[in-house]
Length: 269
Image (cartoon, rainbow, N blue to C red):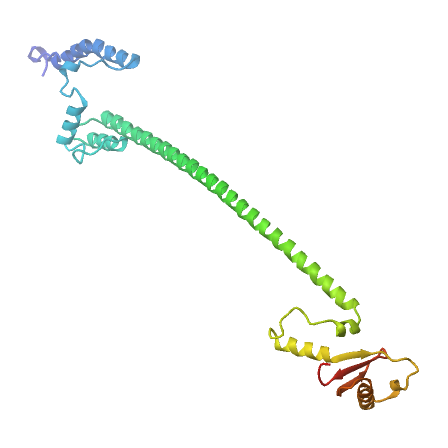
């Protein structure tokens, strides 16, 4: 179709919504810019009178009522508050930036708690170690003093025992020296020992035998040196009978290597 019958193209209607949106954006830009400046320069100032939660008691009551702080009445710790922040971040309707911010604070609180706990543990461990070191030092010092006292006592006793033992050894050495240097003749002529006769039967028997014995020295040219022991018994018995009025019986006669003759009587003269 052509000519005058053609319809003119319709013009598009004005976009009212877009214009209104542009107007709102223009009016909101100063407010957004002002908010950005406030966050950049410092914390946002809040009107405390317009807030529902005005102190910690109301805040705790609100969190417990919403089951964000459980169990009710539990002691407050950094770990408990971090758990509460995670619960708040999981609430419906919370935007992603708020979720991320709340979770970030929660994790930071847990790190602060771990650092505080580690520091407390370190302080407690150091205090206990210092106490243990002091106790051990005192115990060691006391033990050393007691050991030194006991050692000094034992040393004194040992010195006394050593002196006594030295005196005994010296006396025994003197007696042994005297006995070794004295001839057998002196031993035969020596009197009874100081020990009682009935104290030791063997000692008493030895004393009796020693008292019945006599050592006789004969000249080198005497014919008695060549006589047998039985002949010597007869000779000495005959001589004893001629020398004394009493009859003494000679029990035995023994020639010694040094040339002497050991004569034993049947009884004490």
